[in-house]
Image: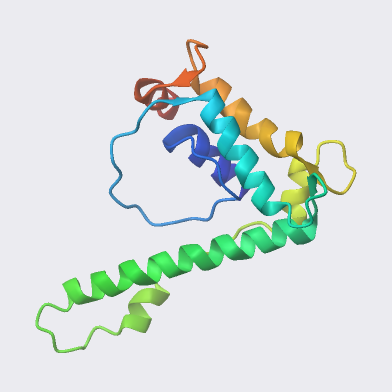
Length: 164
């Protein structure tokens, strides 16, 4: 899950959020440049949203809650797309394509538990994730993508990263 999120942040949109979940391909607008400051701001916001008790760190329970929320949001989006696909696929409108069968083929699953995510992010092993620990791998991904080190990742830099 963390790896997917980092790849998502680093290679596609560089937009921060809580740990990502797998989603089917969808059409995406052309990527836009993004600055390190924008990424840092998005990461701060994402971390703040996960830090439910506002103690400046994220524990396993908070990671689990964020993970659950991400899965629910992703499943709701997939269900909406499944309804549209069902309507489109049922061209004769006889209702023989079961929506439940179709939606079941597009499941969202987390490959890591909250404890596993915590273990990966908690670099000082204190049992919780600080804002710096949360941001470090994502900012490192940004730095890898920012080939000319100007503080902005352009679509060309994202494409170069994807080719590696």
